[in-house]
Amino acid sequence: MTKLIIKMLTKKHGDITSPEARLKVGNAAGTVGMICNFLLVVLKLTAGIAAGSVSIIGDAFNSISDVAASAMTLVGFRMAQKPADKHHPYGHARYEYLAGIVVTVFIFVVGANLMRSSVEKIAAPESLDFSILIFILLAISAAIKIWMTAFYSHVGKKIDSTALKAAATDSRNDVITTAAVLLGCVAEYAFKVSIDGWVGAAVALFILYSGYTTARETISPLLGEADPDLTERIRQLVLSHEKVLGIHDLLIHDYGAGKRFASAHVELSALVDPVVAHEIIDDMEHDALELMNVNLVIHYDPVSENDEEWRHAKAAVEDIVSGISDRLSIHDLRIVRDGEKSKLVFVMDVPYDMLNECGNFKWIIDEELSRRGADYATQISFDGKA
Image 1 (cartoon, rainbow, N blue to C red):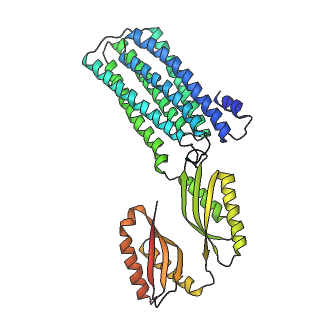
Image 2 (image 1 turned 135 degrees about the horizontal axis):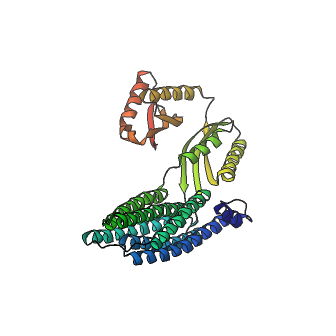
Image 3 (image 1 turned 45 degrees about the vertical axis):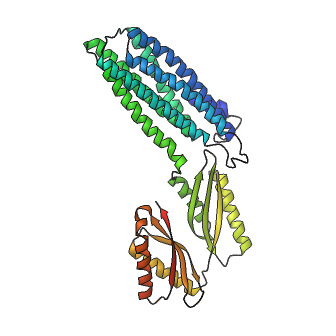
């Protein structure tokens, strides 16, 4: 059914990741969520009030928050599709991330309220009025949420939506919540032991923990989370060109789905005609946009391959650096011949956990160059890397 819905919504657009298709799919997912969650509110409230169960009623309020979360998903998708303007030149796609954050807030609120009600029920336990009808209502609720979990998860992955992935996690939590509540009610009815409040408290703890994990996953892109897979794909794209000698300082900026920008320094031989080098760079930038939907900007670094002194100096520095640690590397080395003593200027890539040793690295390099008879001053820039 999920695949059929997606196919019907995107048949005019072809590419499901296109802005038009994403908007249609996102709107559909939000609408489906609102309808299903509203139905769940009715089912659970009916069952909870009839049974006098705080855990069932708490689960119903969880579904009320899900209705609001589905509405927020709709709003987030619509806002994310707003075109760029003079105040927001990179567009508004991050609204989708914000919608995901709002969903996590709802998760925390529900968890906190359910914990409060459960503690009250533990302090003053009441007997449940359980029946087959209530069992059926809760079983139907769990079945609906199982389908919604699969629906949100499939659609979220298809269009790479943070908001829908958060909704999938929330729906999965609801399945576990409803199942736990149902089992607790059956156990209390069968064994005459008052555990409704304890079941509610356990469910509340689970909801709060899932809220934490969902918040971490949703906020991470806003903080500039690294994407190793995309980084490697861009690296391979650039290095696949026969005239490219190297790539470094690759940075990716995520402004939301379909709004990724990247910059990189690419090394080409200084012997390559500037017009040809420009064409090569244009081709790589075009391929990144066409194949990965990434706006790539490349800075051209000419390498003096025919400079004998440069080759010897580069080999010496690389040998020294690899001797310090195989986790270190250098790039963008050049010789500045100014005054009595030439200067070696280069960038060293240093793992984040070794950045506090940069001063020591420079001292070792200077001492080893002097020992080898290479009369250079050094000017080193240190770049952190994963």
